[in-house]
Length: 250
Ligand code: FPP
Image (cartoon, rainbow, N blue to C red; front, side):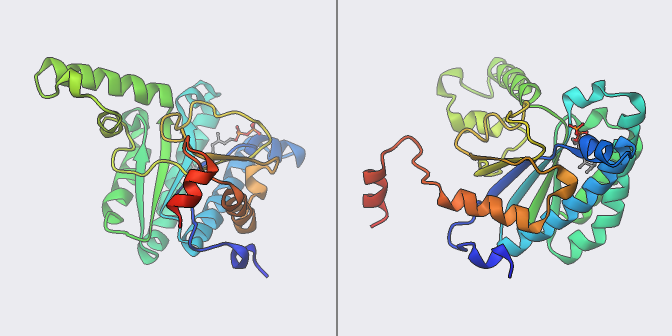
């Protein structure tokens, strides 16, 4: 029996975001190169994408490469960039078949040309997918995103495109890389660390947070369903009290 059978399909998180951590430690524990951990991590992405389509999740954002990850040894950065090309090339037919649209958030201009080309091609080809949007965060960090939004807003106020006094939360949303995407409902981090690491700070303001010690390469479909079941046990009050929610749901 799969845990999917226990999932309430009337309360599915619309947007799941994942900090995929623990590839290096997974490899080290097996006396393997770190790159083997990343390679295995790709298999997990495939499983989790499948599980999200099964559960009817609409947006899945994966933190594949942070702005800070540029500081890793050059070899490892190159491996990750190559793996991304490998992942996209391998996955595109499956994404097309399953109605999955690929999108990206982050400073994609900083990616090497081979990676950017593969990414843009796949985004173009899968643009009409409606079952699930797979968002790959690449050279992404929340502080980069919020700084960019502040600069863009300032420029538009200066140009007269935007009235500074009428800025609302919705205005800010529209200047983020995640424009037109729903807020994150469930944020998962694998690998045992209890931190957010500069990821979706604005979008995950009201997300349920799920941390697991499982290293990313060991995470699988059932682990995702377990996280969804955790989400479904939570009462999401958005600042209100339980009694108000009960009344609203009557
Ligand atoms: C964290 O493991 C993971 C990453 C830095 C990136 C996630 C990358 C993948 C899952 C594989 C590549 C996939 C794509 C789409 C490029 P870590 O190296 O920080 O692990 P550690 O904390 O155990 O060292």
